[in-house]
Length: 98
Image 1 (cartoon, rainbow, N blue to C red):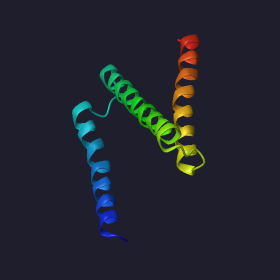
Image 2: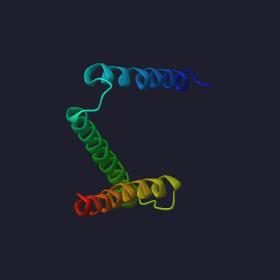
Image 3: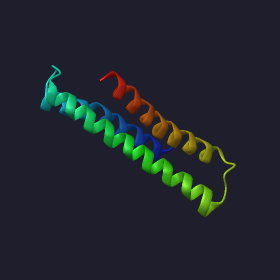
Image 4: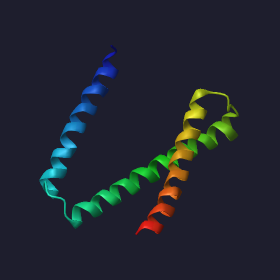
C-alpha cells in the first residue's frame, strides 16, 4: 500500500470516528427538534454538494473534455440524475404525505 493511501485511510478513519463523537456531545443522544433540524440542514448541504460537483463533472466531461464514453462520465451522470430526480420525487411524495 502506498504511503499516501495509508495516510488518507488513517485520516479518514480518524475523522469518521471523531465527528460523530462531537455531534453527540453537542446534541446529545435523544432526538429533539433541534437535532432534527440539524439533520435536515446537513442532508440538504450534502445533497447540494453532490449535485453541484457531479453536474460540474458532467458538464466538464461533455463540453470541455469532449469524452462521454468513459466510466467516470457515466458514474457522474448517474450520480447527478439520481440526486436531482430523487430529490424531486421525494419532494412530490412528502408534499402529498405531509
